[in-house]
Amino acid sequence: MEVSHFKQISSLINSNTAILSNFEVLELLSSLRGKGDQPRNQSGSLATITYETIKYLEGTPAATQSDKCLKKFLNEVKKFGLTKKEKTMLLNLRPTTAVEISLIVQSAEQERLTEEQTEELIEIIQNTLPAKTE
Amino acid sequence: MFVLSLVKQTVRVPAEKFNKDVDQALSEELNLKFANKVVLDVGLCIALWDIIKRGESFILPGDSGHHTKVEFRYVVFRPFMEQVLVGRIKNCDKESVQVTLGFFDDIYIPAENLQKNSRFDETEHAWVWEYESEDGNHDLFMDTGEEIRFKVVAEDFTDTTPSGPSNETHDPSLDPSDNKKMAYRITASINESGLGLLSWWAS
Image (cartoon, rainbow over all chains, first blue to last red; front, side):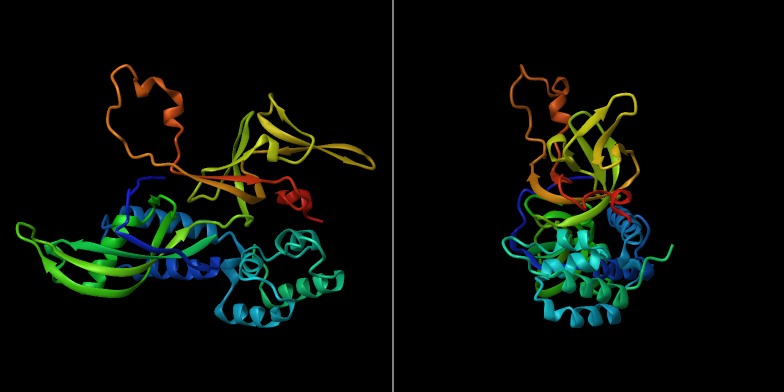
């Protein structure tokens, strides 16, 4: 990987305006690749990072997700009061066991999800987000 | 693991791109400049998301290009603290386990962040988790190429741009630590149940 730096960006307004889910990034990169109007060698580094990132994302649950199932998932988990970061991790990782859920949904003092709620959450994940196709 | 960064910058578009749509030319320049680069305290830049605002373009004496102030959003790889990610083991050594995501591989799990009762196996060149269960101890190997789930616990940005010769007595080529400098390095942990090789937790 080529690494280089710009000591200063004229003005970085906000280095973190929004968290993107893996699915959203995969959509963007696939559309860039599909365009084909990038002249060859026009930006070799863009081609490299696009290829490598797509390759990684295609091995994650994001590969089988769609706008529709994301919306459905987000709608159904509203009642659990999860943070945006937690929901992003659930989408990206598509956990299906209680031990994975407990890693993602932090419970500092008291349990935020009861055993039944955890099971319900797993059920929603399995019903709304498609499993990885081998 | 990905975020949008909002940036304002003046971009130079070379004269040979004047026949293109301005936004298209600007997008190309921004991707040339940032794609696959680490920007300090921002992260690893992936690709342009969109251009939000475009100012007037200026021509400067002696320069054939035009300069345009743009405000844009860029997709950046910058996992947040405590984020759980999945990658593959790239390398094991005595000090740490290195993990790669394919497009980024400066992720290290130091020995003290491995599961309790882990030891380094010299012959296999891999870390081993001595997992205790009721029916005795099991040696769980962390082989190269295996899928691993980890938690991000720290990040380090280092300015690695060459700063010019500092003094004559110091020869950088003799200093091995110099070659190890990484612009963006992530420290991870697997010291919790659910973390570690995916195969450990698959029921």
